[in-house]
Image (cartoon, rainbow, N blue to C red; front, side, top):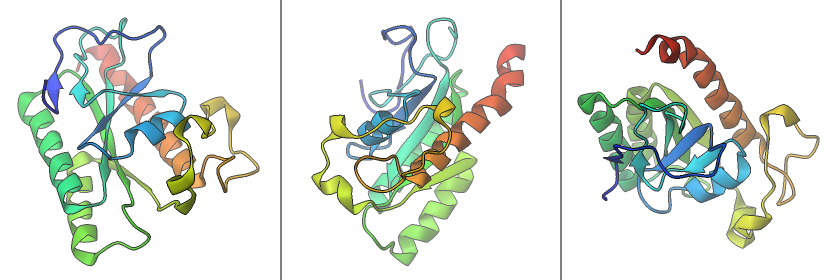
Length: 183
């Protein structure tokens, strides 16, 4: 399967599966790190969930893109394909992940265009400590945990990640009436 393919049957996952699927626009977007930090998310392996069997899998998807021209271009393509194909999965928005401590003006402008097409947008800043961090050693944030006292370093989930998590959960709550009515 190629990036952005649609599954006709629900993905095979342990139950309960994730509440939200994170779909990387390209490899290296930051999906694995976000899925580690945000306990209610899972990696979609760059495939759209079928979206038609909410008893078996979550229909909710958030696209994750590295803030590079290529990453944003790929994210834009996924957003357009989702709309054109009228997929059953629910696109909640876009998370962009900083590729460096500073952002080139042209990339920032393109990010603004792509994020407008996605609807909701959350940005993850550059976190220098991640270069030396082990993925499995990163802490997890659960929505019921609230805001932790420590939000810096490898022993804490950064505030921008928690803010993205809260924003994603808010988008799920907004979409619930549509999901129940089948729209």
